[in-house]
Image (cartoon, one colour):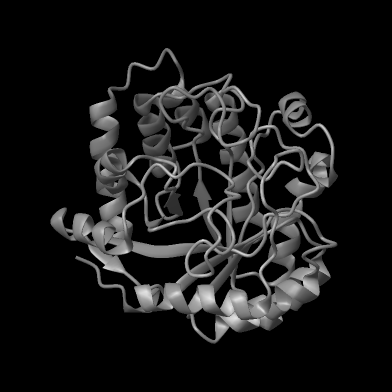
Length: 341
């Protein structure tokens, strides 16, 4: 598939049936990844932030309890997740480089690397030399979403703070790739702008990265803002979804990306409810989180508030594993132990 065909498939006027797309996407996923799903867990280090992202619970105006874990607390949280069976961990923070400097990130990564085979980060955009430091400390993956590729919308939902710098954020995957980052995940947040336009921009962005940084392994994700019944705003953020995306549109988006990028890994968020996750993962997804908590200290330290967004799938890791096995898939805790059916 090329970009022209991709655009036609996601078009509102597309005559391509969703059922045919799902069958084709599943064939491609099985061909390249087999019946396997890699499991990982997020570990939030801090919810302190200097940005005012209108859609985010970490928004600096949100009245939440702010905390940055000390290294002993990081180790306690990591030990808990390690006992759950996880070998792939994603360390996350809000965006406050004064509270969470690179030195702190380096120490947290070294602590996690003693317990997990793969440590990734989702933090504020860094300089190339800072990514090099963190790679030396043991990090091998970066996730950084552009949130929206539509510049007017980007500025509207990021009214102030360093995150308002569109180009600096957009260049982060390239800086990480030049530094030698092994895995890089990009994506956009569904609900901020027209998903078809965002999808095309993400596809173009990924094609450019693949062309110029072929040594890196790229992944994509399209987390979706889903609000609990009866609510108009997620968490404490004063935000209304102006561009809601239906389940049918979400599945069309997923399948189109799988056909355009048959060998790229896709990540499935716990923002989606359990029933839908169990239905759609065979059509393109290769890894998913399980038992996720979206605030620091949530697993073992005893913190009970200050989340970034609502979790729709609150099943335990073992319950997710059971569902995968029931569907005939193999949950993968270590990627080098993956077997292909």
